[in-house]
Image (cartoon, rainbow, N blue to C red; front, top):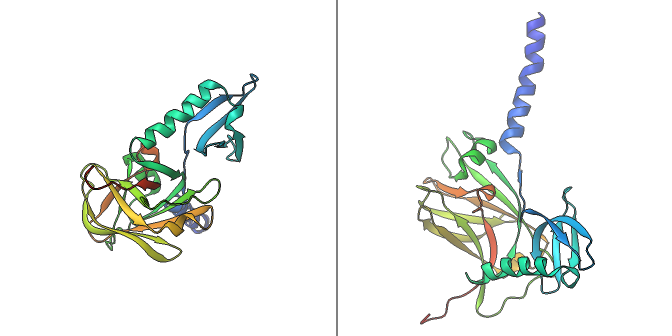
Length: 237
């Protein structure tokens, strides 16, 4: 009798724990935790999120966001920020909205297992039905696009992680970007409308794929999804 009572209690608890493991979003850091210095010698710790020409956007250890005027920082910190911006500029990136969390769902794989592998298998197979929800954060005012710029969702595929299926990105229940197929161990850009960066500062995108899975690198792997504004290549370049 006691065993039956315990089973009635433990089984629902196990199910609840399993659902939590399967559906729990993975919180991410946009940059490494760093000790920053003011010009007067004071110090503070924060994770780099994004920077405008005059303002640095950071997050503290508790996840709270705050801003610092770039002009108040030490020369070493300014050089660090310039280095990050120069790295993006060298690849045509003029703006990025940091990825703040990922939520992976599948029938046959937990989020923690996917994290260990370094990639999320996204597909529409009945046995797996892997889907990925991404949340990005836009800091500062909505960016204005020039005629030679475009918004893309950039994904990086894992080794042997390419697909022949169409990859779809949805926003507020509507498909706003697609890409037909992707090579393994490479980057694929899904063109998105500029309006995705003009509304709410919190941008949630849902990724889906056909029956041929795509293996998308996780944020913690160092090559996770990115929401970008790119300079379009000119003819003859």
